[in-house]
Length: 515
Image (cartoon, rainbow, N blue to C red):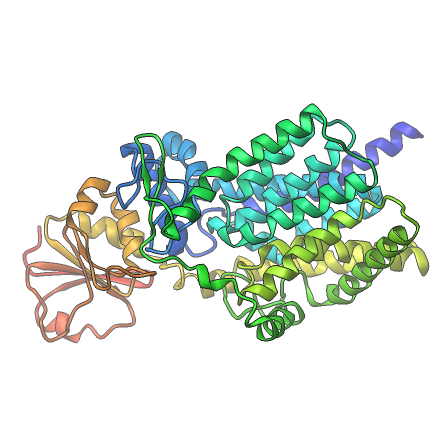
């Protein structure tokens, strides 16, 4: 009987993991977009440059934070790309691998975490809800650098909870929390709060002490945080930037320090509330109005489960009892605080969604336990149907909707254009996507780039190498190849004798006599 029960549990885990993995791997690299997002393009070009030339696009050697657009970009995703670029080259599916791997591991870690702090049934439910969540599937399939943060915070929490049993795991927890700081700068304001609350709570209940492993973990955390502390000192003008052959702490062209503020808590609350209730922020790469973040029927269970955890936690505090669910509540409160301090969209408050999905799992389990355990089968069927419908939508209608946003066709248009020796003018595509597809050596890029708005928080290049950006229909150069959006008016090109080749949402216009 015990062996049969064990086999059933293993089978359930395999089914849920395969469900989650297949949803994330199928047509990976081609959906979303058939192209690439500008943020992942920049992160990928930085990784490519660091691997081949040891410097980023601003000439810094192995920076702790990338200057990128001018106001910075989180560096960990680029560094995680480097081994895969070294093996497979610079391709769309390659640069998305770090996000795919981390988010897939998150499925299993969430199961292990919730089994440890709640119970096995809730763990299965949380795993399933996360595996079929549209938000987490979206997050898993493209390489936005900030979307690594939810994974590393969950990894950090899991090893922290493990460390309460075996203190050696505190070292891994410190490593994960330390690396989370390189995932997303916005969480710098809340990670110390998470760690302090967890630490004080466990000290209060005598679940941990200042043992050798705890002290070592604090040292690991401090060493990982130190470069970013120096980064803040540099960018607040307290010390000069640090440039060494093996590490750089650069000065940003613009420091977005005013984004975190107590002055707009009221409006930020309304914005966050609306995003949670609508499960959408209007950005097609984050969510769809049709299915939301975790399906609209989930929201009542989120509130039910959150209330249940809050009630049990309050009761435990009253009786001075240790209650492990408090750790999920702390994660949620950190996300809530973040949403109050800055004006967020779905990816800017990405650390709140896994706690909410866990709340939903708790809520569903509470409902089933109180009413009828057979409701588990009912809920499983409902979510399976929703998941299948979402997957069909994601790989058909949604794939068509997102394709122009991710510049589908630009890659093949670039391949055709660069096969000739002419100068190339691009219109309707981000300059960083052109830089990414060109694979231009970073020294050549730095030597030739011209910006329209230097210095700025969001730089706009007007030219680099043989590429220029933007054109006037009345001043078409007969020696230049043009890459323009397919929706443009091509009458001037046709009148001048250009040959037009369509590549999805882009057209390559070749001047007469191009060879």
